[in-house]
Length: 187
Picture: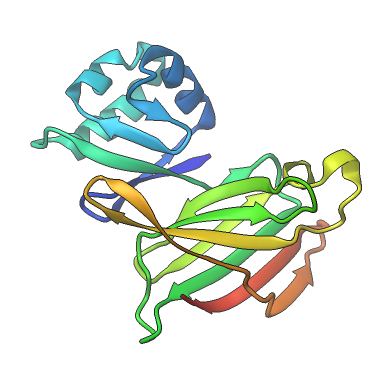
């Protein structure tokens, strides 16, 4: 599942299935990619009957507007053996709401993309992901996480900074899921 966020109005639209994004990339490639939707009536008109419920949800949100820039936020990426959580704040302790957080695994030769999330109104974020997002050939037990943070302005994300957060708390659930909590990350 992915969460769709209206970046122009700073509100969540709701959850959609990854299969919808994949299908629509073939139907409307210039209007959707794995991280973004240019939501307008032309896009809505291209949505096939198969996705009528999602079309209705998107149409209701678009009502009265010509275009909405909608970011696609990962909820889970390639499994759920790991989960990270944190909150972004600025130097004055104000929440960095609706910022994009690209989660990466630092490696010796080539870093791995783990996922991208959009912070909520309080600056909070979480992402579940599988070992196969970062562990080449199953050799890496845990990721070496760093975050690339971007802010939204003028219809685009602009890179703000890169941080390597400290894991404040690590726990393991009964289902062998590892939860890494960063707490507040000051940017």
